[in-house]
Image (cartoon, rainbow, N blue to C red; front, top):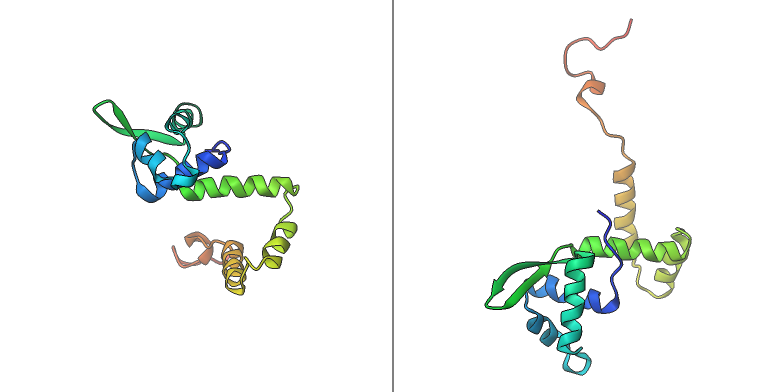
Amino acid sequence: MAHPKLSRLELQIMEILWVRGPCSIREIQEAFPESKRPAYTTVQTTVYRMLEGKKTVRIVKKISNANIFAAAITRDDAGRNLLDDVLALFGGRTKPVMAHLVETGKLTLEDVKEAEQAIRKMAKPKVSGKASGKKGGDDSRT
């Protein structure tokens, strides 16, 4: 399922929910650093838009008249969507993105080795039981 784009504030709210788990609007708002804390009503409006329109949060329970919200998408899903958006800025080309990561020191040799292993793993052909010839006797085609 494709997830909608998230604004910076929405990503910050998602981060709070991923780290802390289910929270009320007040708990989300108070999780922001005091110097950068958005107004309660700003958080409330944003969370309800994320609930009703974007469906990136869900209500998990209600305590009195307060809804408790949880993330409805994973951090990995949000990250993939964000990376797809970044790649789209470069016309789908990965080379400029990789070059930037290398130049800024954010791509390590360890990261490259992990990527190589993942590429090799994806490139391996899948072997089924029928192709191996081990089941059901003679596999010769004469």
